Amino acid sequence: MIGAVIGTVCNSAGTETVILSGEGVDLIDSSRSPCAGIANALRPSLPRIRVIARPLTFTDWARGASVVAIQHHLDPQIRRSA
Image (tube, one colour):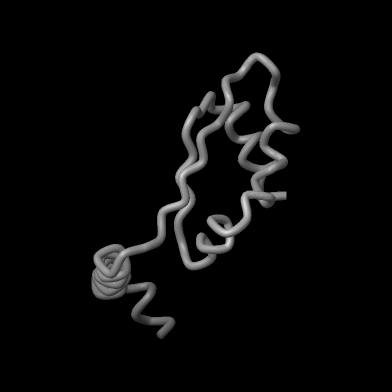
């Protein structure tokens, strides 16, 4: 299903490269089968899609945590619900 979604988005946006990242990206590295549906979903006129799996680094995690902290500090609606 991941491949079908990626292929559908690439059909609409004309994307040639897709970067996958996050906690589960290691599963894609070990088996490319989740992305096998890309070819089935792509229009034949589009070039083959390049899929890059990039695990998150500590800097990525730290950046995300700092963004959430700043949003929490600046948005009064978030502070009221906490």
